[in-house]
Image (cartoon, rainbow, N blue to C red):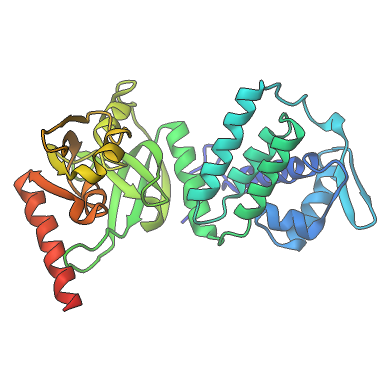
Length: 333
């Protein structure tokens, strides 16, 4: 679907400008030059588009590009000086790149471009490590529709515009999946470490409440001319503090677990949730508590401990986990 544009046209020019900048950043990150096909692979475009963009950088934008022996480059004068980072700050960039590569299940040219820029200010060994991480990232699958949706939602989020989305909710407990039209005020775009996915968190006008939408399940996005007032500063982040991972729109519930002595130390040494409390019993087991937003997400973590954990509260989670184990046993017998 076409997006609303203040200037009366489409967002194609803005998208092309962002792409040209990504191409220029790839050139900047390779002072000895880089082949057209490698640029195309890194930015996530065709070889033909990459060649047209290279020509446009020099012709339309007047950037000091050069070509020699099949490789393209750009002079340092085209960019501002790189960031000056301390060694500790540089290491933080490297760790961020590694985490993103580990959890990204699809290629994101904007992510690659951002780390290309950040790598410029790193010491050589760290910069090379980021480059290798990006080489791994660029082998991830491409999903142009997903990238387009992220761009549209990011724009709406930044401009505080209401969006209309065609959404396909997840099917639970054998229920069928049916697409729905939602009108949403985008409050936040947040990554999940549990599902390796991006989520839109916003106010669903039709349901008059905060809702969480997995962006991969969005089939179409329309950015409307309607604007919205943002929530109180920090209020959405406070709600996320109660989420186990990303779902913050469920009623709060206290989860109480008992871990067997054999895993008690492993559980106690990690902060699994900001509200957690735990205490040791005389037999060496660990009584663990936390107040979380619903049990949809925490149940997966509980199940990952197998028979080394006992669910004490809430009753619904006790039955849910027990039923899951019964079904698993039935399939094995």
